[in-house]
Image (cartoon, rainbow over all chains, first blue to last red; front, side):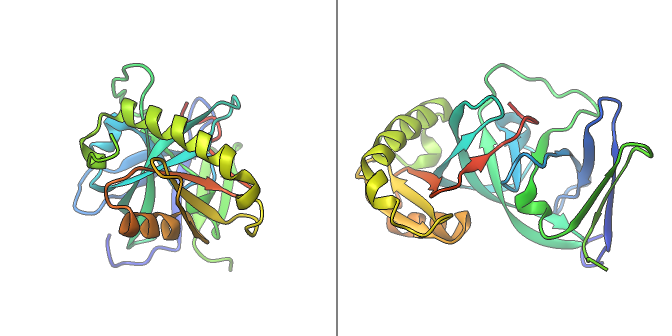
Length: 139
Length: 89
């Protein structure tokens, strides 16, 4: 898929009404299932265990983040790469420490993507048809 | 901890350190940082209180990494902030 520009990324709304997309990772056969979270203004946030699936470069910077319950805590900032609309792109990866042990569950999203990655594209979440479309171009 | 390489410190200890020290420095620096343009990203050195700024998180983080190779930074956005919604608690 790399090198071939894609106009749209297509995902779905799951049974729990979460908008999901599959992210392609450079050099990996397995995609990363993520939730599209418009309340998140970073690019990609994952817990520390799923982060091991990604190739990333750590930094010494932690980001002070406010979560939905109003609590604030720091998460680690790293740099990683994904395939985005058919091209490799460097992204800010935020890695949060899991507060309780988590085991991967099949078909469960392993992270969230936010408006820092989705902007400036057009995101359509259609809960009627259960379809998620992220369009690269406005036209 | 200040002389340790960031990648060699356990994550829990690291986050506790950056949160406690970062918040303390932020409180102290707040009058100064409030003069910066809104949405400027600031990364504060958790050991010394020195800081770098950038228009984006990546820009500020890269400046921090090149200036303070062995210290931890605490990233904050002036007049804005970073929000994680509810998808990953």
